[in-house]
Image (tube, rainbow, N blue to C red; front, side):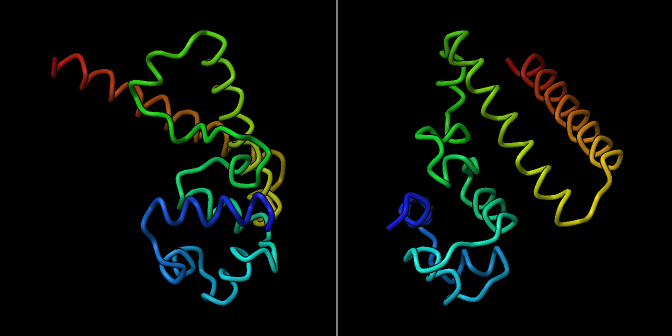
Length: 141
């Protein structure tokens, strides 16, 4: 069994999801999903991104390229990261995001210019959400 198959099953069971429920979320039939989890087949990259998203995982963790699921870090753990750990987290998140963008670019046949516009929109949305969260935290001590 591949690292991907093991992690897929592990993350699904941690979320207390059935194979059918996860298959439905990513738009495949249960047999296809079961083949991924059993290591008989591997999904296309766009499905890997969908699986990672539904399982609150980075693509690299799900594929076995990283042993740390950087999306599964609690807020308290985040506050206690060293500068080096925070930089590693930032680098991993960027890598994950760029993987998602690359897959989306290929899947939707986007130009480089359209892709750059999407990156800017995502960053603006993120910054807006962070500002709102900060305002809420300061107004609710």
